[in-house]
Image (cartoon, rainbow, N blue to C red):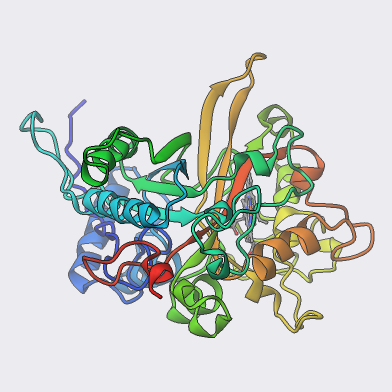
Length: 463
Ligand code: HEM
């Protein structure tokens, strides 16, 4: 068979956006909200025509026009997070009670993180025909745990108690947590979320922190004294994504996520001045981390129709289950009446976590005002002693108010047996023990850096 070279024509992946009031790796990299230039779309149309002739694609009609492609860009890409392909999460505890030392630790963390983010891909020892990407799109996002403010014994270790973000606390237990998951044991002072486009780069960034941080800290700040481990790194977690965004249950996770319009970001993701938080929190965001195991043996014996009923969406198209469909080619979702079981089970995941009721609730909030930005990564970590796959989802979500968003969604809707109507039961995925949460924590990601001398959390120390 002739070995044809297919010339790839793609929209270039967006890079992290540096220099915003927010940290990288939360709502960026994201596809530009306004359209990339016309030439790209013309080239893409020609490329798709060639691919169709070669029988490589079948879901783009022959008649597709540049304006159709632009429409698809607007609905499927514009303003959406273009998350990196691999994520690594690492926790760390501060082994010091000195406020000055904490400042130096945060300064060095900032230096390490920024060095890694701006570093260009290495070319050394790579053979000339190997393609080296322009960037691995590295982001290192730093989160502060509640124990950085008040430790487990109630001690205000760095005199920061009065500056603790309002909703930052140890993650409570929720129904559906595995028996051996104790959130108190899994809490940490700091969390690093490393995201890049190559697993090797994740490893390199992680090892750089784990192996050099304490060494360099000791050389720089403890000159003359004995070397110390001021940060104890532990508990590394990993995740990846697939090109089709499907996770292990084979459904597309992330269809209905927050878009990058400035309005949504300020209303739902980033803390604003008017939020009644300590001033230094403005521009920061809370991160909820839940590691959720999936029982594939139970899941994979279920028929597609049963699985769809548990998720609340069609497996193939991702459209919500509903009797009222839009036109044959129209992919506009038609959401069912939140209380009507004729549109699929009321305890399906999607209906439990986002009911979309037409009127504001008792607190005056529309259901859609409780959304948060999800940045999920599937994980796989081998087989258990019975040969069962150990896999699931690293559920990572960013929001400006844990109580109004994640906790309300989980306690009042998802795990509330009587929501939306008496006797509905909890989220079907948890009810049937397809899911169980095995790890997690709450963190606050401080705002982005103001200039090259700034460091994460610096505003906490300005008196
Ligand atoms: C292994 C765990 C989970 C899996 C496999 C999963 C899967 C999915 C899927 C397939 C969708 C539909 C596609 C979409 O709208 O993005 C979805 C939507 C959603 N999920 Fe999950 N999910 C998981 C855990 C959670 C958790 C713990 C929460 C938080 C309470 C959550 C909140 C949401 C929300 C808010 C939506 C959007 C619903 C909408 O607006 O229609 N998910 N999830």
